[in-house]
Length: 459
Ligand SMILES: Cc1cc2nc3c(=O)[nH]c(=O)nc-3n(C[C@H](O)[C@H](O)[C@H](O)COP(=O)(O)OP(=O)(O)OC[C@H]3O[C@@H](n4cnc5c(N)ncnc54)[C@H](O)[C@@H]3O)c2cc1C
Ligand SMILES: NC(=O)c1ccc[n+]([C@@H]2O[C@H](COP(=O)([O-])OP(=O)(O)OC[C@H]3O[C@@H](n4cnc5c(N)ncnc54)[C@H](O)[C@@H]3O)[C@@H](O)[C@H]2O)c1
Image (cartoon, rainbow, N blue to C red; front, side, top):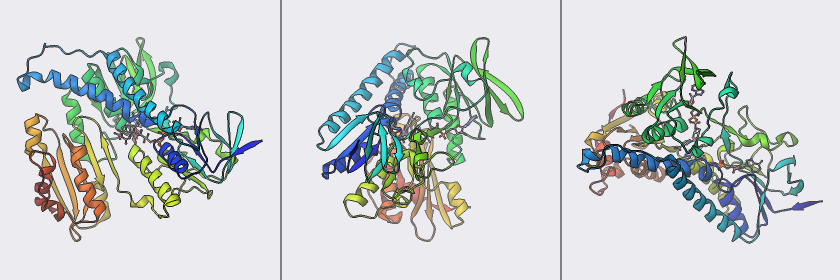
């Protein structure tokens, strides 16, 4: 005996919930199956909790700098991690509760709590019940990768999930991986008061970003007292005098760093291995990402994969955009494609790094004639006035078409200010549209026209 739905959505992440809602509002019967918590990674273990805790870290940092601004505070600033975590938990709970209220208000949508597994291409089993549909949408996300390495069971390191529940401040946090997760937690815990060491195997932090930005970030983190080892590949874990320790190889030599806690932040593994895909014709690649076409349809017509599990994006906004693409194509008669999306993301250290379009490295490989301009944040009035003038801006423009190819801002407010350039790229307008615009003073954005007036050939 099985029940049939017009649509089955597996995973209540950043694409699954709005898609299930949109389908239900269009009059379809929809099963939304979630094995854990509504909102998935972003709400429960990703963006919302980390950005809430980063806000606490910023306050601690600002308080320590108070004297520089003529504000008198007691000399030592201490962080109560349990209170930081409580504040974060309240924000997360509020966010999840509003999703729950929304889901419950939707006629035709059934929220099923359980793990979905395929029996065949169009049948899934959850809590022992078979559900069928001619349209199935996968939004199963990813989880922290746990490297298979000697000694890992001996030290049982923290992941980006478990570190969110610490109530006592680590004395010394050793982080394996200098990517997004590693760097955001590194600065956060340093500002909370922990000693922090990063072990990154590439020859720079953030190996996918331009080297000048990575070097700028390393200088900012080192300046706050974080120890950074690059070109340092973690090869094993062990206990050293009772403490968890990371063994790494650097310059062909083995080194050991021990701390009170170890966090592994070496990437994420798609949850597609929970789905029993062997019972289907749905293809996945060697990393476990589900293979999709430009419309996000899998190798089985009628089954789509959205969000991090398709390997086409790894951010909340890319997952949400996947929902928009699929919903527009199915319900609005559009033919939207993933390739129309311009790459954009931000790393939320302080100051943040925002990056859109092509990196300088990608532009150089493309072989086209390009103009480049950079401007240090010390020449941005707003940043100087705020006493937050670390970093720089960079923009790359096609020398023939005058279209912006890419840009990055490592600097205060950069995550917001960069959207002016992103919107011009989406509008298909040349950079001169911005140079003619009058921006509000004093803002970080007002210096973007000035930045663009400094364009020179990229050599
Ligand atoms: C620490 C951290 C910080 C981050 N910060 C940012 C940020 O600042 N900005 C940003 O854009 N992105 C950030 N991200 C990334 C962002 O969280 C994800 O890209 C985003 O959540 C998109 O996820 P998704 O929609 O693909 O799936 P998810 O949100 O991961 O949801 C997938 C859901 O599917 C469920 N599921 C899995 N398998 C099954 C199954 N078989 N049956 C039923 N349910 C199942 C899971 O329980 C989960 O709830 C961060 C990530 C981390 C880890
Ligand atoms: N602000 C944001 O948008 C944000 C924040 C956090 C996470 N995220 C998402 O989460 C994803 C995962 O983040 P992540 O930091 O775990 O992965 P990542 O891929 O960004 O970084 C992992 C790092 O670990 C290093 N590494 C791997 N194996 C190693 C080893 N044995 N020894 C030393 N270093 C090693 C890699 O070289 C890499 O730099 C990101 O790609 C991003 O999509 C986004």
